[in-house]
Image (cartoon, rainbow, N blue to C red; front, top):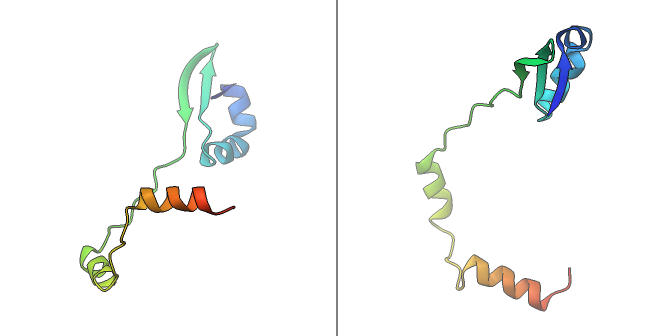
Length: 80
């Protein structure tokens, strides 16, 4: 977490917003004590259309082995 004074935040607000948008938390202090935080805004999640997902996946064949076994076999037998 990055910590800056109110004066620094005023002078470099655009840069601090960019850093927060990239995932860094920025703490703003007044007289050495934290008074605010800049964090990335939560992006709204898209709703999943369950019916469309079922239509897409209903024609797909089931795997003969679990995903874990498949990856383990791939890892042990192939070079990557």
